[in-house]
Length: 270
Image (cartoon, rainbow, N blue to C red; front, top):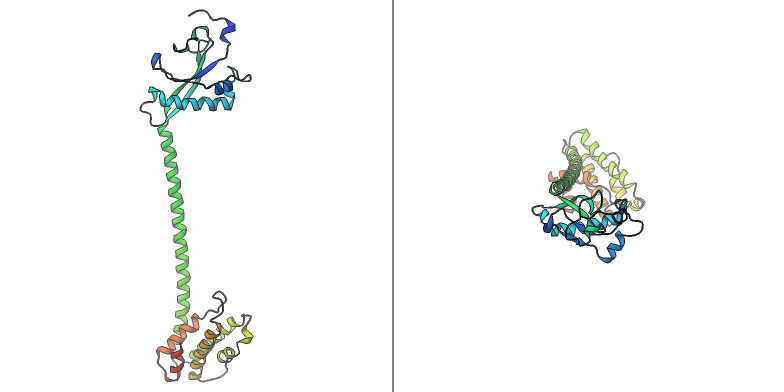
């Protein structure tokens, strides 16, 4: 190899990207005219080419093409760039491959790329992705379980209230608390109806749901008549604004199961 003058070895003319193979085994891809202009732009020098993002992006793009051509990547499931360096007949750099006609005078350089298998790294990313989806699925599942438990809890509370009403109506008809419970159920419904804007027009319902001192039979008849009139009067009201009749309905069902003669006609209407 002839001695290289200072003028020649400071020349800047990289013409492509190659792998680390030796002799004829070395694979390379030459820059297109447009890409060569980008790499050899006035502001890009031998000392600062790593500092130019566009140049690095271009080298990496060509390196991926070389990875497909290179025999050094055989057996690699996910070839990745390990190192990039400038090679050529220049002081402090590796000698340019023999395939370059101009190697001897130091004008031609290549960006030499070595490769490594990125399988382990990609596998780790894949496991992280799967772990992320598993965690999301578990959180979603737990949220659904909590929602179902909340719905079940509310249902149990409603059922408990209905059972309490039915229990009150199941008390002995001779008990003083029995008639008091019937009156309290009607009073509770009246308080709820009183919040409706149209309550003042519920004349018939007000008559059947209110009452003073009366006997057991009259209390039982009054409760059923209160339920029937309110239900008939509010059936056209939107469901969200409709009063809750669960308590009085549960009590009415309990009364009708007794098949008391004085409640027969009212029970048929239920």
